[in-house]
Length: 189
Image (tube, rainbow, N blue to C red; front, side, top):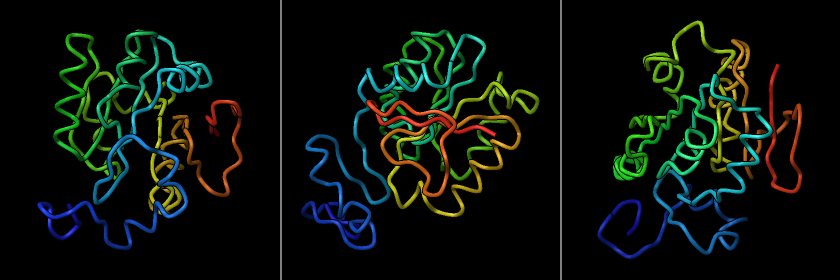
């Protein structure tokens, strides 16, 4: 499948393929789409992120680019926190919701750039609750390091949210804490 012909061979056209020029060999599993890599996050990575961010039952955990929901479901199952996954892939959101069963993790189809609105619209994630919000990211470098995305994260951090990134971290940001073994960083203001 190509970016211009979804039925064709699996060839990706620039500039999307440029985002993966340094790391396609890193992931022998998962899939690539026109806008993102879909690579499963391991439970040990999710656990490291939850530990680093000190996620508890009173936290509101948001996975930006949640894919099939493994991190959100893990957060909900292991801590009892409110968990929300946001992804623009309807199929993956459907799979995430099915995997959540009755656990209480919620999923919404949406663009990560609309995260502030999508979060504020959810019951339990309202306007005054930003200090309890943990934003998890495992996003491609071109998105993670875009000025627009960094401005979104920075604005939410100014309101009290914390950011936990896995694998790809915001360039120029100094982490508050890090788990070097698991390549997970925590950012807060």
